[in-house]
Length: 237
Length: 378
Image 1 (cartoon, rainbow over the protein chains, first blue to last red):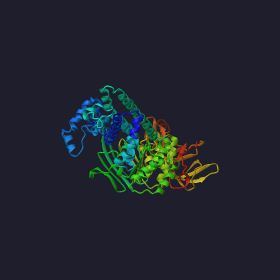
Image 2 (image 1 turned 120 degrees about the vertical axis):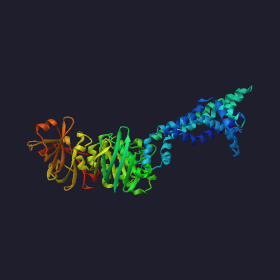
Image 3 (image 1 turned 90 degrees about the vertical axis):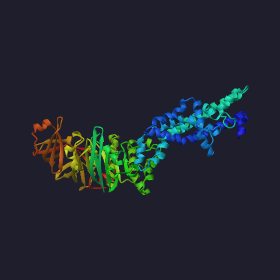
Image 4 (image 1 turned 180 degrees about the horizontal axis):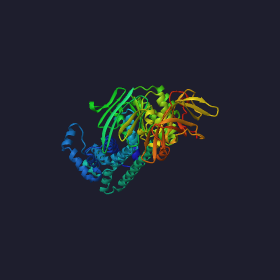
């Protein structure tokens, strides 16, 4: 199917490889950051604790920092010679110059967007409903699963789609952290960049640009559609 | 079956110090807005932690700060009915009703659910979403949801305050049925004397965070010094027996031997009813008045005159039927030279049926159609 699809879009093997890798990286980035994203969003929305503003700042940092700085910090933390990177290597987890590293960079860059969307939807939930659930005998964890999370679902979906779309487009932190290795870390933006560096690469680059636009638009429209459906369901119509 | 509550909490500029022991049945926590009633309810539910608290329901200690015991709200087995229904918008009515059952450590049998649905008249709503229901329907579902969580106690925090008068009349009968058909004790917060008169078996009166009186409903509502709702809402409760139904459409009641006439009541002769006589509907006359259209005249002795801060005075008249409150102006009180111990007549313009007391399951309650009807005899 992949070969055929690639042919149908008029893509060469290298181009297709970049698209497939980007989808894989974005998928895992969005999926694996989701549990932590929900937890952090909940904490910021509902808990008052010392260091809340610091946490809020940390979460938003990748949004404002130059991506190259984020990438460099990742390299200093998870690089093969960094203490944490070395320790993780012992147990078989390597990020540097691997697709998993691209996923990690994409996850961190998309994290602020994800947390923001989920946090807003949790803040929109009337705490009185959670109180009512408690009074009916549900423990806090059950209140979360049966009331808070279902009611926050539109925001959670929007957060996932935003993080996914952001991961597809991530370039600066990725190229700094895991470089631009074909088949390993050459995602869509890196591939476009690479094509533009060689003579005659413009047409391939243009095809990837079109694909990028289509993927981003699809993700946004999908998230709008899902959010609306969920909101409708939540209102009970 | 008893509820024992002791609370103490220091707010900024406001001290809450409440202590009451009440039996089963409907206990009204009665007082002005801001008198601390709702805080008491939240403390009992475990949604608010006061500085000192001891709450014991039927011998089960829910909270005793002295002994370091404090159960979290979800372990208290207390069903709360809030002012706003707080139904879960993402669940159907049926799922809302089942919510409390799912987490209850009691097994509430399916038959009880069916009975509750029948009693609350929400059978046709089960598959709907809360957003599509009227305020009254939502509140009925909320009542059912609280009951089906298998509680030891029901807390109702001004459950009618958010509804208009028509909706209030729709919900009140369900609380009456609850009181008469379900054995769970109810703490009912209200600032409406009419609601309290209709529902309460016991009344705890609140004023600025303190309990100013507790006792039977007749006793507390007949004491103007404990009337937290102010003179406007004051009114005494008297008990009467249905004597006979007359051919001209009137029902004759006997209140301590004094005949009272009301438009036809749906209750059998011999049935015991409770009447609420609003103080502002009572006219006083030292001589027995003649040539009046009002049918209901009660003789009595003035037990107490309480001068208000404004132009009004509250007169407590001891009649054979019990204490009747009358609100008159200070000017009239002076003109008539009203004094304690003086013989006087209460001319009653209108009477409302507050509650069916003895004839449980018969009459208006049993037919499920009781309304807070006001009868005007003038």
